[in-house]
Image (cartoon, rainbow, N blue to C red):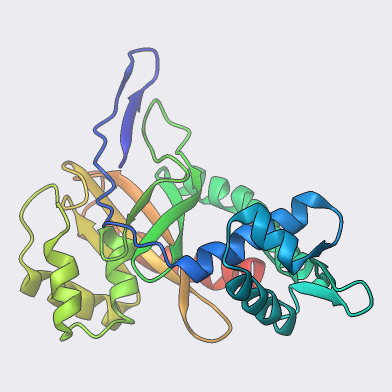
Length: 269
């Protein structure tokens, strides 16, 4: 959640809990990750039977997981020694992740420039899985009174101005979407029908607004960053105090964010 700061006079930080649902561990996936982690850290090839004993996995299960990982090219198998090692495919996955991290880093100066020009805090949100979004980069306005948004902060995918954009790619008639919406703790009451109208408005104008529902006293305006496949993988949000801009000023920020996101997509993808 946002933290308002006043230079030389202290800071105020109204944090909101990160409404996480109970996590469910899928055993085969967990075992596959444990195998990959062990092979990466060991640095030497291992036999299936040894891996099963070290990791406490059923030998037959361990063999089947290893065989699948070999098929997916993330584990290599030497038929002569009958041993397994971390594969080239795993290195490629890591390389792709690092590359995306570098691209986010390249976006930081652009966010800082936009924050300075518009005198607002600018955040870059990324979709994480099916139900969460996370701030991967943030730039505060260089003014005496500003709003700080912490990088790494996670929220339900439907929350805030960015949530309304991600919601445009969901079926708003789906009962599960409404059920997920009802679990969100908004700063002030927000009926689902009102939210659905705001999502439809976001589709129409290409940007979305959260007027004090994400955090009391805070207004957020967000625009989408589309991937090459047309999905919304990132959003850019301008965060400011309610009343800091009139309706015309809000529309100007929305239009500026749409143009900014179109350019940012060339950096992120």
